[in-house]
Structure formats: C-alpha cells, structure tokens
Image 1 (cartoon, rainbow, N blue to C red):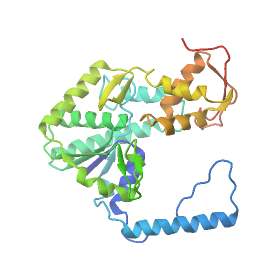
Image 2: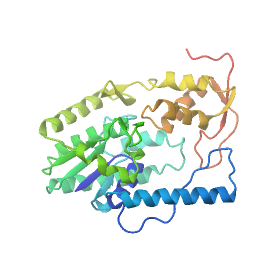
Image 3: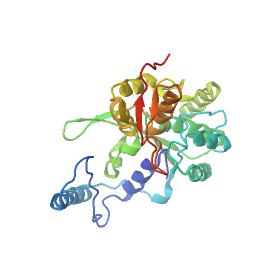
Length: 317
C-alpha cells in the first residue's frame, strides 16, 4: 500500500507509526524547558527519567500501524498559497515558494520540489499498476488542497488501483475526558495513527470526479489563498486573516518580539496557516508603516526573530 501525506512532520510521524511498539524502545526522550527557566542538573535528570518512563509505557502498550516506511510519500509544496494555474510541481510552484523563502532562509525549496515531484511520479506509477493508495488529509488548507490536487492528478492519469482516504477529525475526546483539537496530521504522535484506521473510506468514482472538478474551479479562480471555511475549501484574498493578526499585534507592547506574537496567533486561533504566511502579512504591515524594525535576526534564522516597534499614528486604511 502506498501512503500519501502533505507535510514533513506528518511524513516523519507516519513512518515511525508503522513500526511503533516493535522491538526495543528508544533509549531517550526529549524534554522541553520553557523560556526563562533554568532547571538544575538534578531537576533535568528527574525530568528525563520521568519522560523515559512514559515513553516505555507508551511503547509497550502500542499497536503498530503496519506497512513499510519506504511506501510513505510526502508532497509538501503548499498548494493553499499562491498561483495554482499550473498544477504541475515545476517552475510555477517554485516561484511561489521562493517568494516566501526570505522568511525562512533554510527552507530547502529545491529539495522539497524535487522530492515532491519524485513522490507524485511514484504514486501515479504504482497506482497505475493496481496498487492501493491511501491518502491522509485534514481540514488544514495545505492538506485539503493536497487531497483535491492529488485526486485530480490520479483521475487525469486514469489510475486503476483502489484509493482510500483518512480524514483527521477536527476534534475528539481523549481517554482523560478532555477535548483535543487538531490542525493537521503533523500534530499526531506516532502511537496514535492506528486508532484512526476505522475512519478510512474508499474514494469511489463520483468523489474522484467531484474533487477533480472542484480543483479545476479553484485553479480558475486562482486566488492568493485557499482556506477551509464553512466546511469546505474556498478561494480567499490575501487579507482574509489580517483582522486576527492585527488584533494580536495591537495587544503587544509598543516594542515586541515578532516571533512571540506569531506564536500567540498560531496557538490562539489555529487558522490552519503557518508562521511563514503570518510573517509575510507582517512584512506588508511594515511596508505600510504600521511597524518599524528594531533588530536584525541572526544569519540563517527566520526573519521574524527580531524586535518590532509600533509606529504611533499609523493606522491601516
């Protein structure tokens, strides 16, 4: 079975999920320290032991997803943003990604383009030979766009193999009776993928045709953004999220760290967009004179790791 995902984080997590719980448990876990905290060596050791114990417990109780990591393919080219008049992964998509590359200098655009091209070629080739393709997607705009786009490619290629899809729930109750919301498969830890298999549905001919037609409509509209709104994928102007972004920027002190503001926006609103798009909109606000740059980020670091100052008297018209 061929597995298809649309983000690097989902790609890594799914590959681990296939073998999670098989063999020896990894010997170390990652612990996180909040900004401003400096735990002692003893506190770090205790935290590490506790984290390792939790990992061993999860590993021992896990049910592996199954499959071969070599059969997992990722197409990560951000179809939710920019010009989609050309749906091939080529110069048009490269140009869109390059426009945003100054936000994150180490974004490895060419590597992403080449690996996505190879992934699509393999998926279509194996589907043409009758292999099963399973697509993991969600209401995240990039994943939803990827789903529609990939189905349009499979219909155009007249692939003969069965197609299945697993859509991530927007929310669910956990075993601790707490409510969890998700913005994409990249947030799902490896041991959890297997529990979503019952949500798998076959993509039959009517859905394949409908998705292909709708992607053609989105291409014709060719808006700056595609968003998930009112239960479906929609074309949208680049300003669609500005009210959310400006609301949080207005709540910041006169001088503030741009990265912290972006983190607040991502965590609070869960809009399905990433840090790059928010940073691009803040760049526009800077050009409009709403903010001024106080510091320059370190080389090869995201441009938003800098201090900004509000410009008094400047308001957006």
